[in-house]
Image (cartoon, rainbow, N blue to C red; front, top):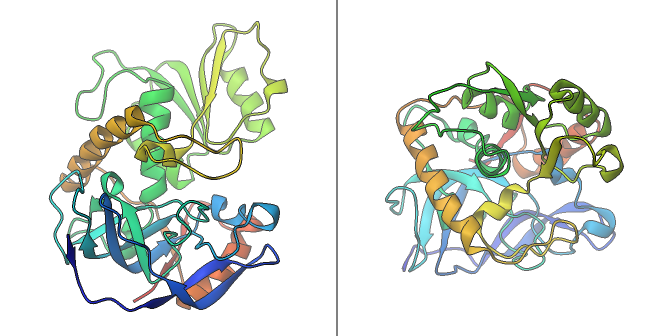
Amino acid sequence: MTVHKLPLKQKAIIGLEDGSLGISHDVDLPRLEEDMILIKNKAVALNPSDTKFVGKLGIPGAVAGMDFAGEVVATGSKCQTATHINIGDRICGAVLGMDPLRPRVGAFADFVGAADIAAMKIPEYISYEQAATLGSSISTIGLALFKSLQVPGTPKNPAKKPVDVLVYGGSSSTGALAIQLLKLRSLKFTLDCISEPETMRFCYQCLGRTGGKYTALEPYPEFLHDRPRTVVPDWVLGPTVWGKEIGWPAPFAREANEENRNFGIEWFQTVQWLLDEGKLKTHPIQLGSGGLDGALEGLEFLRKKQISGRKLIYSLS
C-alpha cells in the first residue's frame, strides 16, 4: 500500500438529519480498503440519481454523489485495474453515493475512495471536467447492452451481422454512450434511458408483435408488462458491475457478486482500450461554478429537469 500525507478531515456534501443535503467541512476521509483507490477530487458530474437519496432515503452523515475525476493519492494493496495506475495518475470513475455501508466514499467530496475495477485512466486529450461525465454511464451501459440485453458482439469484436437497438433517451450521457457503441440497422433490442411509464410503452410499441428485449435503467412498472407478450423486460443497476455489496434500500440492495465483478473487470479493460484509442467521445458538458457549494445548488436544476443534452459539471480545483 502506498499513501501520501493526507488531511484528517475534508469538505463534502452529506445527508443531513432532516433528510436534505448540505455542506460539511468536518467529514472523515474514506478508509482505504485493499481493493480501493483514493483520489484527490478535481471535478464532479451531477446525475438524476443524486437527487433521489433525500428524505427517508437519505443517510445522515453519508457523502452523496457518484461521478468524479481526479488524481490518485493512495492505492490499496490488492487493487486490480484495467491498466496499471500509479500515484499521481489522472483517473475517473464512479462510486456509490449515500452508501450506508461505506458512508465516506461518495463523489461529492475533496477525496474519493473508488472501487479498483471501475477506475479509468484519463487520456491526455480529455480534461478532468470531460472525464467526470463517464463514470456511472460506463458502468450502466456495460450491464445494459452486454449483460442484460446481450446485444451480439462487443466493441472489440463486432457482430458479423448488425442488429438494431433502440436507445430511448439518446441525449442523456448514458444514451449517447450507448449509441456510440452500437450500429443501428434491425430492431430486437430496446434500451430505455429515461425509464418512465410513457417511455416503456413507446419501446414496447417499437418492438411490436414479434417482441424482443427491453432494458430500463430503473425498476419498471410491472403492470405495464403484459406477460403473454414476447417482450423480455429487465432493468439494471450500474454499481452492481463492481461486484460489491450495496446497502441501498430495496429494490436496489444487492449482495456481493463475483460474477458481476468478473464482468466488470473485462468491461473496464475494453473501455480503457476504447479511451486510449480515442474511440469514445465524452458527453457535452455544462460547467457550473462554485465547487461543491455550486454542485449542491445544481442538484436543484436536475430536480426541476432543467438540464438536457448536457452533463452538469463542477470543478473542484
